[in-house]
Length: 183
Image (cartoon, rainbow, N blue to C red; front, side, top):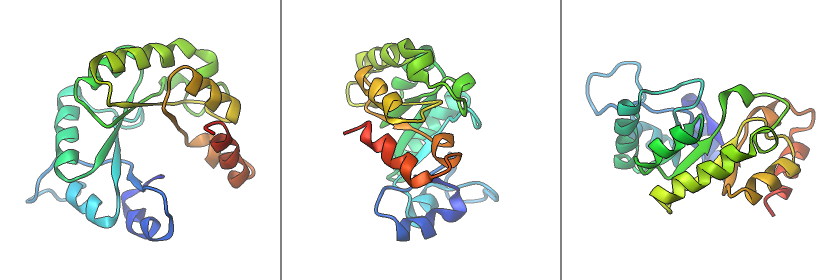
């Protein structure tokens, strides 16, 4: 679960699943008022960080530094890519996960596995051709187990989802439905 930095400690104490920070900054100890020190995020209880989300895109050269700082702090990295080319470029930076999310489908009613299945399959091929160890996630419009099953069939190792759960009338049932697509 990816939470705001102020909630990491509290959430990490009440759940048994990995807690992620929604972001970190590529800073070191010192004068950095207002920035998120990766080591502080780790100490608060996060196991990983989300980077380069469409709502918080990073310049590629900066992204490289952010990934390095996360690794130095002992955080796994989930880096978002907007398309196949972006995913391929990011794969060269060796994050732990790449989440492919076409921005125009984020928060929508049609999933990437339905609207643009080739984005998933082509991204998986591109990423694995560079680094077989990187796990590939897909996001954008994932709402039900059929979306998840199709994503996995296309080669994704998992999903990244937000609005599909947050906007659901029954969040627990929506989450269970998505999990059913993985098993």
